[in-house]
Image (tube, rainbow, N blue to C red):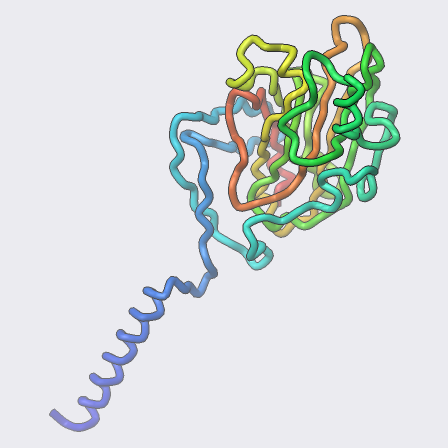
Length: 267
């Protein structure tokens, strides 16, 4: 065999070996891939014109869903949001209306003064949370909106207490407009059964998928449109502990009532 052909064969062999080593190393020219656990039949269908999306999230199995990373995806598994646990005040959040009061709720103070329904506040990972609960019938409308932040994780997680009510929901905003709106009913969480007293004061983990908004500037808005009357005295929302992560803390269909997604605003 002529020398030049031997050289060509040797060079080709080296290229094949180097390519195999590169691929086995887990590297990829299009970036790493993050595999995030989701529950069976988890589906987020983007429908135009904010058509109502019934939640189809099952709870019996946990396959995985592969999310291709982009340049902005955080290298850490968790990214905290500015004042997501409401450290004594609403710094970093815009408060409108009277519903959420002038400052967050101090859980230790409230529990020591029996400022709750049914049983002491429980299940919350922080010391302060935002709520429209003020005892008695003092329920008033109000909004709570975070400062803009870049979505660098596929899931927004938080802790919440909320009955099913058309006037209580959590929104994801882009350019000040609602992209994702989610209604919850934590009173239906499996651990509560028929214990309404416990449900009114126990936080439940909740998740809103935001993978479609990666690398976009977004905001969180908590909306309460309930006026206090005798029938609505337990129709308040309590929320806090906001952070984003690669995994969902809870996507149970038992607490997500429905969700609307405005596909035209996603891109």
